[in-house]
Length: 97
Image (cartoon, rainbow, N blue to C red; front, top):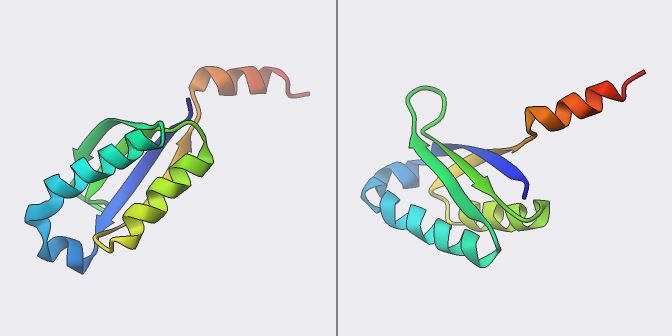
């Protein structure tokens, strides 16, 4: 199953309602599970981003549904990266001319 790294920043609305962050995270996890996905890890961070999440979803469409649903709530903005295992990239590199 593809792995995704989600980098997040709280919006003003998210900061104003920071005490609801645990509830929002649990809601996001339940919705991810309904799409066949799952959260592998979640970290609060210091610096450019406020949190980082590592998740698995069956495909990009399911990940997109999760991202759009969460984004529409207005508490955070995110940047999603597709994580490709080093072993898979090594195989691709072997095939290069």
